[in-house]
Image 1 (tube, rainbow, N blue to C red):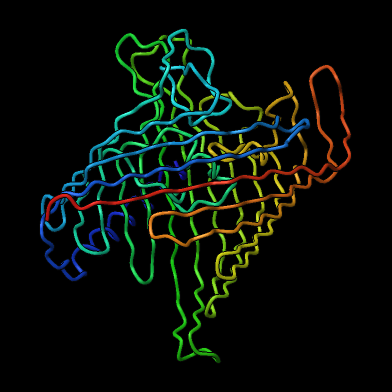
Image 2 (cartoon, one colour):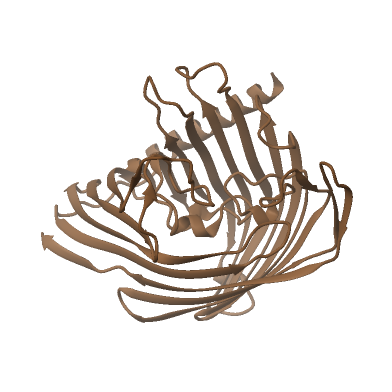
Length: 402
């Protein structure tokens, strides 16, 4: 009951803030109706050399293409419709009855298609410049701003687009992204479970004005982050052997961002949690993690250094690198999962509709102990892994009717 009470209080607070944001904002200026053709194209080549007892390595070579027509029905109402085409180079058949948000790609489907093509349809209502409601295909190009242990960055380009309902709020003192992603829909005779995700990404911000800082053209923002991902498996039409179960990841902490001209730096310290209820698909019912991250950026180059310490933690949508249960070794659990990550990236931007990104990553696992059924206690030395990628994004936009 205490958990349900806290959930009700959180929902009431979000509803109150939503209403407050709507009725205390200036109306958006009118804009002429128009029809626009936009194309989102992301070519990716990502290679992860993750050989070890935590997770297998893999390569993702391919692209997604999303052409869409955007009709500005009124100044604050927009309808978008198009297609989402995901393709992996060298793949000729795709499972057709499961989404690709879980990797490795599902292979338990007997029904396959040669092309993975999905509709992309979105209705968006901007109540004012700071509050938007979206139904249909969701906006998640930045991974909802979630930290990596909660949301795998690769899902932004190598998984099906999210679809459901989304509330976006951007105020000077707060950013809020609240959404429901309906991942698996079931009919009366479906042989799999209904599945959906509920997500929250929010920051309460306090910005120090430039006049208060010792140097001009600089800014300093402190923020309190609150993140959460919860998933539900179930459905009333299921047979008795498919039981409902729920899982959740959540995180909170402190953060700061500083910019001085072309130079920027950030620090975020998060405490994370995991909980499993009404099910036993994972070996842990609860766990925790600590995740401090230090980042620097100069113009188009960025560097990020992070440390992870997790015990009993299972990432729902995050990379299995952060899990205390092995993704490739049956029944192996890790007592303390400690990981140091160094990431470098360079974003080449010379054209309006094109961006090229080069990225490299070093990951170092510290020595660990674990348990595996039939093998007893295991001890392993530290191990250094790496990954790298190249991305080309092409996003042209053409006005067809003003």
